Image 1 (cartoon, rainbow, N blue to C red):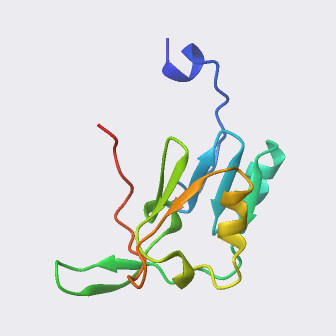
Image 2 (image 1 turned 180 degrees about the horizontal axis):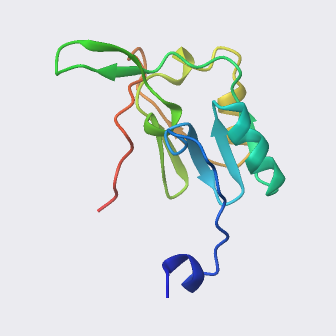
Length: 128
């Protein structure tokens, strides 16, 4: 039996590359996304979506000392740990209008970010 069936989860088909990268999962019913098609699909499944029309300035590391010319993704720049949402840099650098902060605070999540640092896509984290 698959874990999806075992846990009684619903599978959502998204036929797009980088779909996981374009989604910051907040909880079972909420997500922040940077792709309009993904936002539309999630909304069909009654997921509350904060769609960011303008892609945030998320960096990718080329090596330890400099940034890549490629753009990073929201899904790799944030991670939830229990009731905390960690942003890998200063939230203000990608949330000038405060929409992300409000979306997270409405879910009673404590925001942990790193003031004055660029937001970097590390690909997520694994809690051990």
